[in-house]
Amino acid sequence: MRILLVEDDHMLANTMLAMLRDEQHTVDWLDDGQQALNALSGEHFDLAILDLTLPHLDGLEVLERVRKQGMRTPIIILTARSDLDDKLRGLDAGADDYLTKPFAMAELKARIRAVTRRGTALDAGGLSVGGITLNPDSGQLTLGEQTINLPRSELQILHYLMRHPDQVATRRRLEEQLYGWDHGAESNALEVHIHHLRRRLGKTMIRTIRGVGYLLDSQQAATCGAPSCP
Image (cartoon, rainbow, N blue to C red; front, side):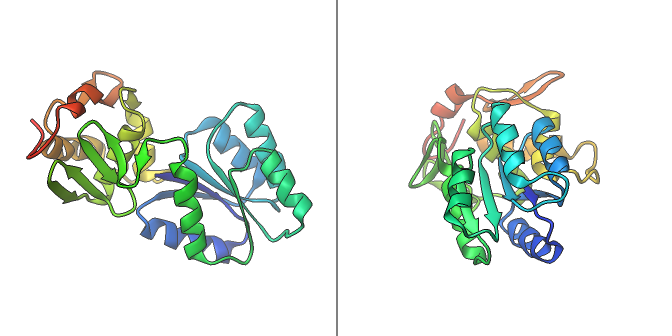
C-alpha cells in the first residue's frame, strides 16, 4: 500500500516512516501543507496520514480542499489538538479517523487497518477475488489449500491489482506502489515481479494491456481453486 505521510515533526516522522516501512508499505513523506495538497491532487495514494499544524497550509484546509475536489483517499488526521471542536471539524471535513498526539504506534497500525478495510472486498480472511485470497497484514497468498508468503514487491503489486480487479493499472501506478518517489528502481523490475506473480497464479490471471499496463482478470481468478490455479 502506498501512503502519504504529512508531518512536520521530523523526529516523529522518522519513527513513523520506519514503522510503516517495516509493515511493508511504500511511504512518501512531506512536511508542508501546500506540498501535501499538490501531491494528493496530482498522484494516487491508498492512504494519507495528515498532521493538522503544518507550514504554508493548515492540515484541515488541505483536507477540505481535497474532499471538495471529490477525492476519496482515506485520510487519518494526527494532531496535538485535543479539543472536541477540532476533532468534530476534522471528521465533518471528511477525515476517516482522528488520532491525538501522543499516540502508540500499535494504535496507529490498528487505525490504518480499519480505515483501509472500509469499502473493500475484505472479509475475515483477507482480500478475495475469485479463488485467490490475500492477507495484506501477513503477506500470505492463499490459492485453494496452498498458502504462499509473498515478498514485499509482489505483495504490493498484487494488493493493488486485487483492490481494482478488471481495471487497468498503468506501469507508472504500479511503480508508485513499489517505490513512491524513489527513482532508484531498475527499468525492468516491474516486469520481473509480474513474471514471478504469474508463476504463482498462472499465466492468464494477470493480463498485459499492451502499451498501458496490467489488470487482474476476475473471471480467470474465479477458476482458481484447489489444489492450484491453471
